[in-house]
Length: 310
Image (cartoon, rainbow, N blue to C red; front, side, top):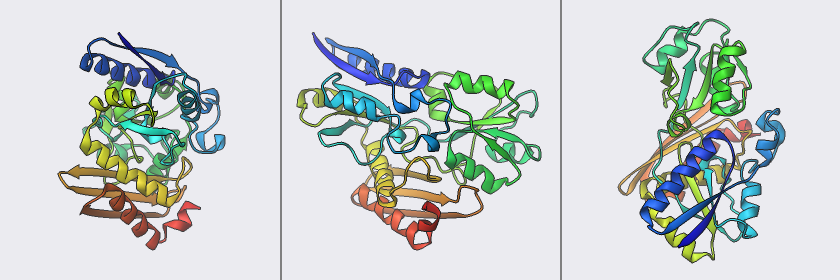
């Protein structure tokens, strides 16, 4: 019997994702046992602080990568959007499974806001000065771009914690990733997906990253069974854009690529933190995904995105 040690954060969503990966690996490889190892990261230890104040890249990944490098675990499961494009020497992206729905979801306080069918309509019917909860600077800027009157407040914690805060702390609505809700098998009442035309997801949103040691060829061979080529191509384009822009968690940046055969299309936008300024580009082409991402990044920079990036 082969045993692989899997590293993951201990949050509600992280465990749901990691256990899904473990089940799939064990189903694909009879005789394999995946052991779960929970690792607390800097981001987990500082729940009371807004993410930009914690600072630096990899606040949800560094401790897990250290455990991987020193041999405590054999592979790690990350939300790909949390994984910086610059990977430590000795580690690699062993597999990228098929992507979940990358959209942002607006969950409305059902007692204050009537049920609606589209995100566009939901944003329109929110009352003047409505209070919206999100821990993401990107979502905050995009909300303010469309509705400058909105009051955006930080809200962190597990999905259940954020949903509880929606009802107990005076929010009219909160914004969460639809992928996280789906993977955690949570279907909140009165929720709608926000339109991707305005709410371009974070780079990598909805995708998982299966990380391993580059030299551990045996583990990589096992993990490769989870690979989804179109998702890999899309996220490689998105990560290339992030690398060129040198963007971090304090950057209001959205980027979403989709692969269709040999062709990749990408939409990306950079905003000022207050949402007053927005620079957006769309590119499409064939060839290496990284080149598409780099082209989109250059287009943003040519339009003046560097001033918004700080």
